[in-house]
Length: 154
Image (cartoon, rainbow, N blue to C red):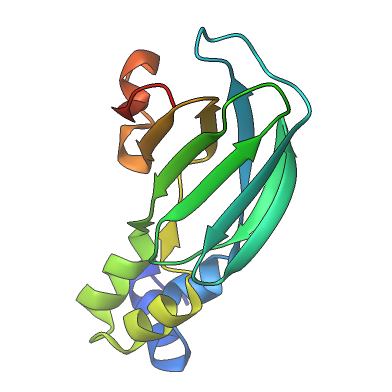
């Protein structure tokens, strides 16, 4: 017997949420730090936070964070440099919309509470001395459009 994906999501949403079944509560993101002139900055101490927890990491590198409907806030520090700040916008994943459309919302509530219905951008490009905002929906855009500077140098 062949079962279509939307039908499987419908059935899964009644049991616990489609994104909960197809996604992890954790997401691995790539953390990079650059100077205001764009040069790579190594061995930077970073803290990533959302309402689900706080994680520390060295940049450049990868870090696993817990998904959430809340934005991910990143602060990076290095001696001799101004701190870098980044806000990664949380966006709902496709599984969340499948739950709303096919599952009557029960699965969407579960996925919202667990965070599995959301994603952050895969790459977090922190600029030291600046505050930037990045959005997952811009990941397909040309590189220069990915980072929107919200303020100047600190």
